[in-house]
Image (tube, rainbow, N blue to C red; front, side):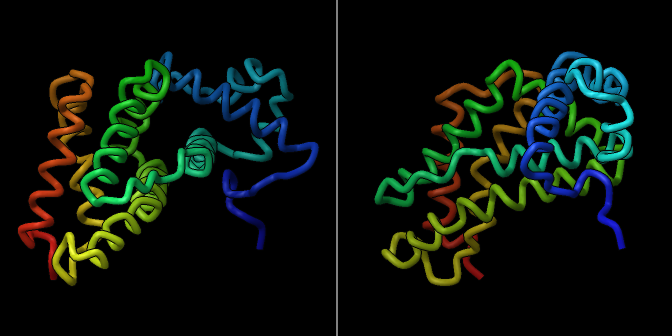
Length: 200
């Protein structure tokens, strides 16, 4: 059975095409939103043939799915500071910087908006966040091992609690979270975890 469009991981000489197309798709999303994404336009911007783009990704949603997969792969690895609070602060700061970045912030807003009405984009977005949460969950697990959090603490729930208020602020007010907002989010998630809110 052939792979679903947008899920193939091309290598070698085709890697350059994928990089160029995904970069162009991200640019269009950041500039014009999901509704402005057109495979022919992406092909033109990436300076590749339209047939190549249609054959490899198949649809706009296939292209967005691969873009999100690539973003998950390229995201910065977790920082380990030696303390659970320090690690959660590092996570919050990374989320804040991403949302404040003119290109990345606009791109995420476009994809999140599209995910509300497109099932495949929603699925790709869930996979992206699952990968990022899984990347940072060991920081919480190490905090449990060090005795900073109660046994049975749900590591993934704590990581999600760090970024949730930052995304909520962006999506409900349109205001980009600043560094103090990131600090509050990290401290709030840490305090709740210490208090056993996330312990099973």
